[in-house]
Image (cartoon, rainbow over all chains, first blue to last red; front, side):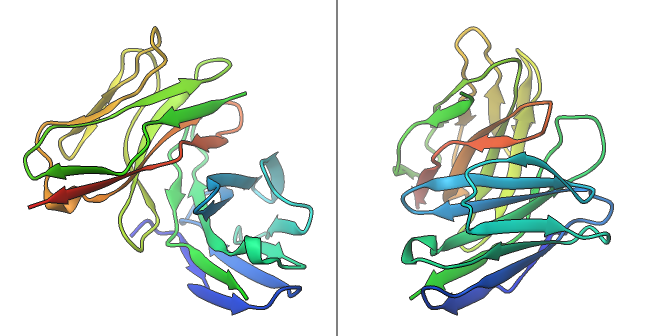
Length: 114
Length: 112
């Protein structure tokens, strides 16, 4: 158990809809990262937050957004969903020590867009 | 750009066989290098890491050495077990942001 929790585990929705994925980092970790894992694209970094502020951006679509709240949990919002958004979405967290830091991954949310 | 290339799978081995999964990287600066493992239905777990040239990471019988001259971080294990069946990801991280780049993953199946 990594200490990172993600909800929900599974999500089934329709095209055009909007969903919110939630992540709680390990206790004390200030950084949260979001990744998308799909069969054709592999594991893609989406976005990173550090202590509530956006720190790095990867291959995140404009239809997607994220935020990190004062209690350090994070949410990833996916809107105007398309079939191709079906994937596993992972959250990871890391601490506030000196870089580089190990990222600890949650179990993922499996999203299916029908 | 910064990226990782790892050998394509799938890889199928018999129990007790020797394993090598190749990983090479391209990076500006001096990245840290990682191997993560993903067991079926689970998230990624750190297997081992190395933060500077010539460092050797090791865990659970797996080893990888950070080779700056060949920009490589190949994963090896002398004798694989059925329980090692999983997908293995090579990754690099740049110090400034801890932004991690993953390889495509290599699926390993070990048969009894």
